[in-house]
Length: 98
Image (cartoon, rainbow, N blue to C red; front, side):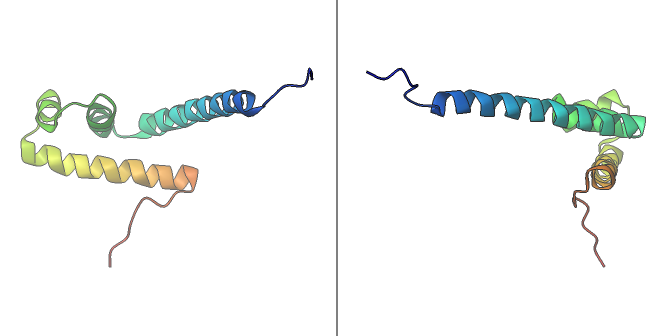
C-alpha cells in the first residue's frame, strides 16, 4: 500500500480555477477602469446595455434621447470603448475602413 497521492488532477484543477478567478478579477478591474474614462453618456450606454442587460429603448429613455440618436451614441460609445481598450491593453478591436 502506497501513501503517495493517487492523482494530482484534482489539485491542479483547483489551482487552475483559482488562477482563472484571479485573472477574471483583474480583467473586471481593468474594464471598470476603461469605463471610468468614457464620456458619461457613453458609460451609461455601455453599462446599461452590456453589463446590466437593459433593452435599447430603456437606455434611450433613461438618458432622454430619441431612438435614432441613442443608436448613434451607442455606436460612438462602442467605438470609444474599443479605442481606449486598444490603447491601454494592446488589443486590436478597432477596424479601420478606407
